Amino acid sequence: MALEEILTQTEARMKKALDALRHDLTTVRTGRAAPSLVEQLEVDAYGAATPLVSLAAISAPEPRQIVIQPWDRNLIKAIEKAIIGSDLGLTPGNDGAVIRLNIPALNEERRRDLVKLLHKKVEDGRVEIRTLRRHAHDELKSKEKSAGVTTDEVKRLEAQLQKLTDRYILIADELGQAKEKEILSV
Image 1 (cartoon, rainbow, N blue to C red):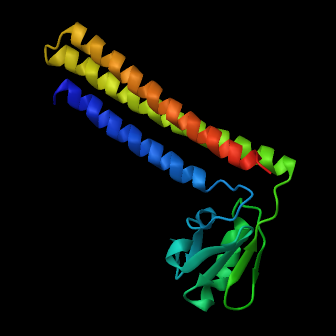
Image 2: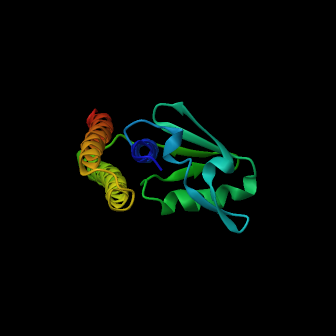
Image 3: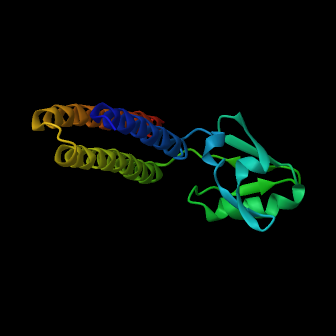
């Protein structure tokens, strides 16, 4: 494998790590209703843990309400149980056909808790990016020893790798700051 390929593969993995972080941040609650808050909740349905998005139509008809309409009405109790067991802090209400989640306005204490959770998720994203850098660095070092690659080439690629890492960590921080701003806006 050529040395530049190591950088190309590492960048592709870093993009995937950022995509995963973006997806993870959509599950952090803000003051507005968003179907992405509940889509990945694991519901014990038909004897297996299944994502809620596979079991129901999820919509946000109003800024402070999520409506979940299960395709099988027998799953309403299981879906309610999954919502109550999650860390969303929401209480479901149902009329026998649909489940309604009213999203209360966030109080200051809950906002601070959500910001702490957000910071943890962003830090996990940064750690993933740094781990990818370390793997690429180790791979470059092993190529230097085995393939007769010059030290200067490895140093040049390590500098490029560091710039790449810095850029992706900055993007992760910007994603976190945008989400934090969204959480803290009243």
